[in-house]
Amino acid sequence: MPRAAEIEELWIRAKDGDEDEVARLAAREGIRGLEERAAMPTYRVTALRAMGYAPGYSALAMLGSAAARGNEAEARAAVASTGTIAARKRAQTDLEEADELAAGCASLLGAAKDVGRPRDVRVGAVRALRMLSDGQEARCVKLADIPKDVDVR
Image (cartoon, one colour):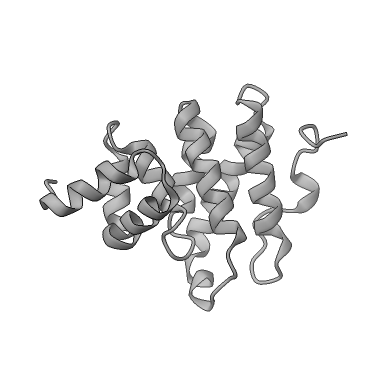
């Protein structure tokens, strides 16, 4: 769907990954706009980066899928955004997105266990899973299920 010129400019500025520009894009587009653009290869990595700044857990299903099955750039952007989401303080509204949380966690766990994925993607998935599973509000996965083979020894 075509966007107004000022919104297209936001996409152009956010493409390089500058954190402020990516956050600005997420605030303007919202999760639905980011998901729409993530379906287009030209915008996918930028959209995945911006999803980390969308409120709640609604982006986790798409981010988990990209971490598990996307190309390297997509997977790296997805685990970085998932880490950003996991590091945030939980809000009551986040609990209403249990389906997205569960789907995202399942895909992240798959990425974490997949020895064929790049190491940094696996490490990012493990890190996000541990943060998401640490709180008492809604456990992502059992901590015992998270692989330890990528831990520093």
